[in-house]
Structures are given as C-alpha cells and as structure tokens.
Length: 346
Image (tube, rainbow, N blue to C red; front, side, top):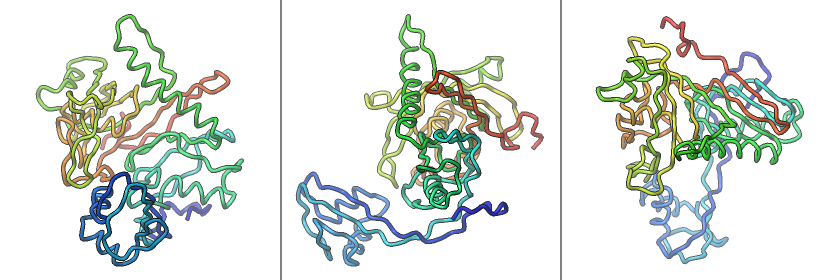
C-alpha cells in the first residue's frame, strides 16, 4: 500500500482479494472449451480443474463439471486471490490542478488491471491514495487517460472528471486523425497533442531506413501499420500489421538520432498516433528493435514465447504538450533516466 514514508519506494509482493471475471455466451460451447478459447493463458485441463473446484458459475448457479453452454448464458469465474509481484511506488504528481494530474510513472509499474495485475497498478495505488486522503483535491480518483507499457517510464496523464478525460481523449484521437490527413495531398494538419519519447535502439541492420539518420538525415518517419497477429501464448498480439489486413491501424513515429554509442543508438521519437506498443513495433519493423526488448524481432513480429509485459528495454515518455480547455498550452517534462541523457558516459 502506498505510504507517505519517504524511503518506501516499492510495494512488496502481496496477495490481492481475487477477482470475478464476467462473460456472456454468444454461441453454444462446452464450458472448458469456451474458457480455453476466451482466456488462452490456461489450457482445457486447467479450466476443468477450476470447474471441479467450483470457481465458475452459470446464471447464478455454481458449476462443478463441464456442461454445454447456450447463447445468452452468463458466466462468472471467481478467480481466487493470487500474489502480485513487487512493483515501484507511484511518486507524487509532477502536476496537479485539481482535475488534471500528471505523474512520472516508474518503469516496472503497470497502469491498469490486466492479466496478473489488479492492485499493484497505477490505478490501484491511486485508489488507495485517494481513500487515505493523500492527494490534494482528492474528491475523485484520478484515472489514466492513456496507457504506458509496464516497463515504459515517464509522463502519464490522468484526470479526475469525466469531462477532462473526454477532452484529453479527444486530443489523442485528433492527433491520429491529423496524421491520417497529412497522408492526403493538399491537406495540412495541425497536431494538438505532442508526445516525445527517448529510447535506446540496437544498431540498425543493413537496409534499415533508420541508417539515413547516421548519414545526416534530420528525421526518419516510420509508418508501418500496426495490427493483430497470431501468438502462441496469447492467441493474438499487436505487431507490425499484415499489409493485406484492412483492420491494421495507421501509425506514425518520427525518429531523430541523438547519439551513437557502442551498445546502441540513443534516439528521440515523436509519435503522432498512440497505437499499442507503437515505438517498440516501429523500431523493430525498421530493423532496430529497442535495446533489450525481449518481445519484438527485426521486422516487427513477436517472439512466440515472449509477452508484452516482459522487460529489459528502456523507453521514457519525457515530453507532452496538451491544449487545455481554456485554449492555453500545457507542456510538461519528466526527468530523464541517466542512461537516456545525451551526456551519459555509460
């Protein structure tokens, strides 16, 4: 639990209270087969064991074995408490005007509940802080407006009111629309929201468009679409999109070289769109995966044995510009980790 104790920098591993996962059936299926397809992190035998333990209910009645589910059935899986790993404590806000709240999220801290994370998240810590009266003007829990990957550090924008969240979400969407407009001749788009990151890349492979940076190009645009691809452990995962897939999403990342180091390239990346794992995918698609990234391979596809939450890379959201409702511009910076500073001699 977050504390005002200044030396507490990590929440120790702890059990949560469990969670109820609710689903509604759309087509007939066996219970275990439905769950194995819906939550592929566990196989048929694991779901049969959960049925035998009485963890699954259908239409308010507890199940103890496989049954045939019908369209319209309502299921609840009562997941027992599980231990969540230790995570960093969320630091005090960089900015708080009573509604908009911005944090410098530490690497290793998930933003929202998902998978194995429930309480040891940014949202979970904010709920505890508000309940304890530890946040100024804490009439409501600040909720994240966007996501950062678990091991991505830096600026995370939250808002207390639904109106502010809607306003900020609209800016993020408008950035994507503006990026799309720039691809159409005769259209000049304005970006109301600017997000800039720093990261370390593996040296680009032969043929990478990013090699133009070493040859003197000021910036290189990577616009590989991002889409869902099959994945052995998750069923599907965000990766470099299939060019033939109409569901792939427009994405644009502008890379700028800051320094060439023996271990890799230090780059600045401005993103006009906010797709899942966009910078990690675009760097890999351009033949220069993030240094230490265990998931994305050159070309932008994912390793079948790795997961999005696996760490090892450095990626930091250090600058964001937002237009406020009164028309003023808010620009915020997050201190850079030592390894991502230009003057670093590491």
